[in-house]
Length: 112
Image 1 (cartoon, rainbow, N blue to C red):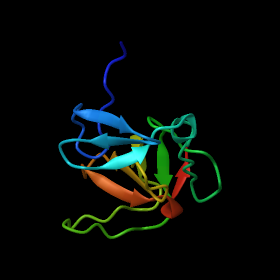
Image 2 (image 1 turned 180 degrees about the horizontal axis):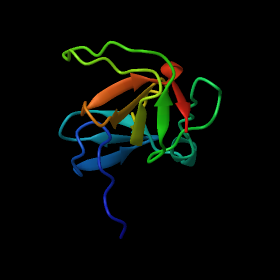
Image 3 (image 1 turned 180 degrees about the vertical axis):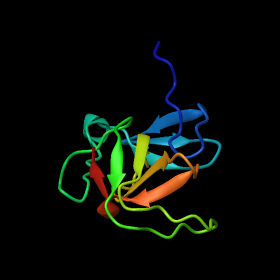
Image 4 (image 1 turned 45 degrees about the horizontal axis):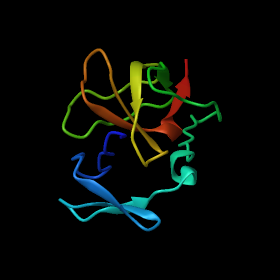
């Protein structure tokens, strides 16, 4: 017997298959149950069109104001070990040397 799937929304494993969908009994979320659902790959590209992946290093191409901080991100700032945001191909998460917990738009980044 295979292990139950976890819900993509609430991450609990109380799920069941109902026809062509999986359903979470806890939160009621439904998602497709076919192999085509597992084959969807998120494509994230930087400002130059290069593919980005988790763990890549990127460089800021423009001075950016950071909400909640008086320190701006200067052009050329290196962001190491980025993480891709699930379901959003326009944003990444990362840390600079001075500011932690950044969420940046990919249009202001280039792959290092």
